[in-house]
Length: 423
Ligand SMILES: *Cc1c(COP(=O)(O)O)cnc(C)c1O
Image 1: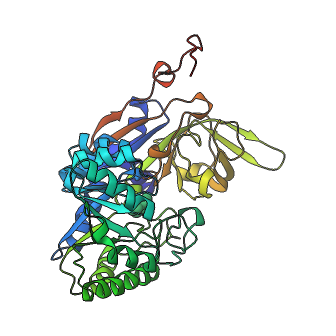
Image 2: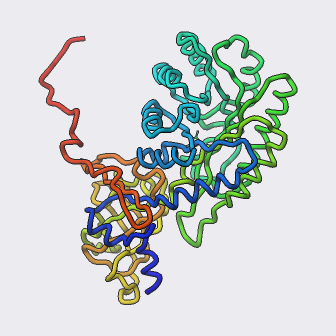
Image 3: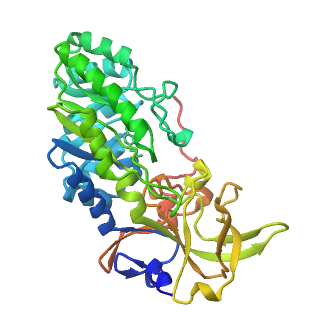
C-alpha cells in the first residue's frame, strides 16, 4: 500500500486528483525535479567557468524554458523557432548556442541580429555561408567547430552522432585546416571547439574518449598560436528509463571526467544537456479505453498514442508504466501481461510489449514514466489527434502550461483550394 501511495504522488500532488481535474492524455512535469537536476549539475561544476545550455529540442515548452532562464541556464538551439522560443522565455541571447547541420542563411541572419553567443559550425559550406552572412550584417560571428571525434557512444544508432559516418561535425584534420585558413574569414571569430557524440549515454568511457581527442586538438591549436575561448562538451547524459535496469552516470563523475580532460583550460566550458535535465521530471498520464483479448496477446488500449510520445515507436524505447489511483491497490489485482497500445492506426503505436501490470479495466489511470524529454517536443497531430495538454506541477500546485489543442487550432492555416495562382 505505501508503495502505491508513493507512485501516485508527484511533486506534492495526487496524480489521480490531477487526472480528475484535467482530461487525459496530458504531460505533467515536476518543477522541483527539474530544479534539482539543474542545481545538482551546477554544484558539480563549481569552480569551473562553465555555462549550461539546455538543449531546447528535448522540451521546448515556454514555461520549461522560463524555468531554465530563472536558474541561469542558457539554450542550445537548432532552428530559428527554438531561437525565438528561447528569447521569448527570457534566455539572454549571449547564453544561446546555435547547433545543427542545416542552418539556413535566413536563420543565421536572425541569430546574428538577436546576438546569439556562438555558432557551432558543422561543415565548410556552413563556415563560408556564415562568413558571407556576417559580413553582410557587418558583424563578427563567434563560432566553434563541431568536431566529429569518431567515437562510438554505445547508444541507439538513431541517436548516435559522433561516428565518422554520421552527418554531424567535421574531422579533426578538416578542423585543423579551418583554423590555419581562418584569416580568409574575417567576420567569423573561430575560437571554440564543440563535440556532441550522441544521446542517452550511460557509460563514461565514450565521453572520456571524445574529450581526450578534443583536448589533444586544443593543445595542438594553442601551441600553434590559436586562442581557444570555449570548449563545448555537448549533451548526451543518459537517464533511467527502466528502474532497476538502467544505471545513470553520476553527474559528479561526469564533471570530473570533464575537469580531468580539460585541466589547464582557461576558457569557458559549455554543456548542452537536454534529456538529463527534464526526462525523469515528466510523465504522460493516460487512461485505459478498453482491454482486448487477441488470439495470442492481451492488449491494453489507452488514450495516449505515438503522436503524444514517439520514442517507443521511433527507437523501441522502454518506458516504465504504472497503474495509478486510489482504487489500484495492486495486491487485489492479479498480475497480467499486456501489450500497451494507443488508438493510432499503426502497429508501431505500441508503448510496451508483453509488459506485466496489475489487471486493468476501462477508466484506469496509467502513468508512462520518464517522458519529460523528447515527449511533447516530438509530438504531432497524426490521426488528427490534437496536441495533448502540458502541466507544470510545483509543490502541490499545478499550472497548465499548454492547453490541449482544440479542433479549430489543429486545422488553423488550412484552407480549401479556392484561390489558384500562376507562377
Ligand atoms: C540533441 C543535442 C543535445 C542534447 O542531447 P541530450 O542527449 O538530450 O542531452 C546537445 N547538443 C546537441 C548539438 C544536440 O543535437
